[in-house]
Image (cartoon, one colour):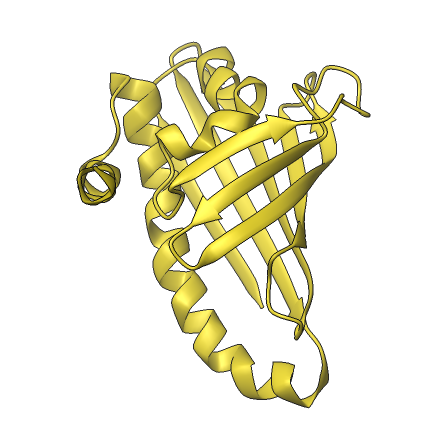
Length: 163
């Protein structure tokens, strides 16, 4: 399964990278579907804020590891290493930022999820629907947070439910 999203954020690339890359562990502040997140362990990749991130979702907990953290090219890639169902082989998300002009940044998100076995084949369509819904919000959540400093309307509703 492959999911691609692209959005334009009306802020300089450095401002977007600060939230997406440098504040990797704090994605729960802006991303729908995350009740909480926290970066942990010393970075393996130079410049990365941590090596891993633990995330609490409404459906459970996952752990992610940073696979690529390229400050010069504004590329962040991470893989879910724990917490997905047994029939998920890999789940890798890649974000790339591109300068449009001094005040605009193009954000490209590319998620690839591979399932395995018979159960994976059976569950793939349902999982694709579920992930499609979740992924629909995330780039917009990032845009809203970077541009305004506040959570998107969708994320704000989730926060209210947690209180």
